[in-house]
Image (cartoon, rainbow, N blue to C red; front, side, top):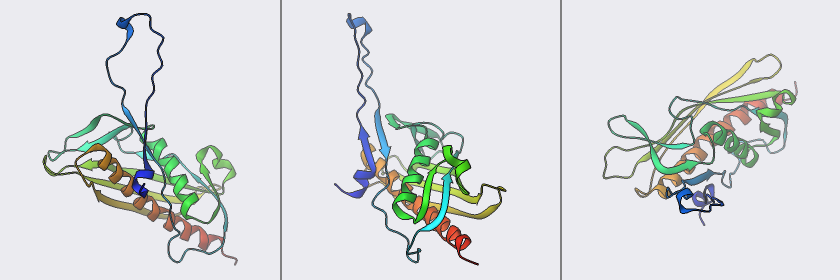
Length: 213
């Protein structure tokens, strides 16, 4: 199994029903649930060799209107935003990307701890991500789409909310085929690439702050 396949898993939806009559049985097929997971990341070149003694909280991302849903977004040539039928992410996009970002930091960075914002008050630093693009884009009906992912990020101090750095993650990945599984694989690759950029910038910023003076 390749890395993209591992990062974009499919979870079957199992429905349990205790029905005494076929009148209560739904004929609507449940949606296919897709999970995004971090790949086997490697630290960026020039990353610190040892642990950086800082604790980071990843806040729940702010997501552009139309994307904050568990549905998988698609943008057509006429700029019409829609969603793939019978397919869902494993949760609302903000929650999915928050969890994925934490996984990426664990996989690629050398920070002492990285957690979700439930423990923000125990972390000296925070990272906030704004999701401006996370959709598959078609240029024509006959070709496979390209997934566009664009994140704006800033890192700051929890004590005084001072901004310590701002950067972005940007990636585009063409789907190998015009099939949903291939499109989700492209999502996984693009999200991994964009978040890797953010992890590298955040680690560099925090490494400089933690250097002895």
